[in-house]
Amino acid sequence: MSAGRPGVPAGPLESSPGGFVPEAERSVILAGVLGGVEMGAWDRRVAGWLAGLDTPTALTVASWVARARAAGAAR
Image (cartoon, rainbow, N blue to C red; front, top):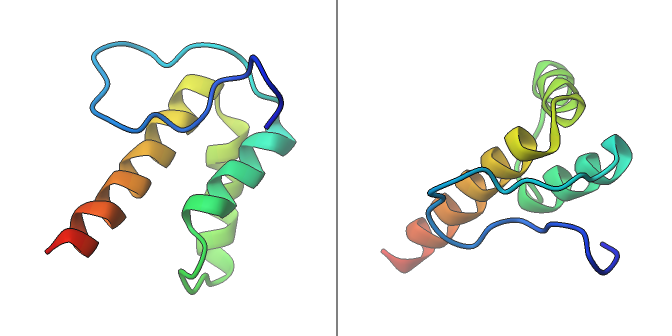
């Protein structure tokens, strides 16, 4: 991700992560947090829809996935 663009928030969100990331880059971000998860055709379709949503929504969901993985690894 280029400098000045929002990344995946690392902690709980109290407000919108804001900013703008182009859809193609949101797809890369989502693929990164979903790395290693076996995906079927429907999973990929829904991930595409998610990447097509606004940046704050996509980054919030990516943050949930990343934080859930980290919480699971800590158990």
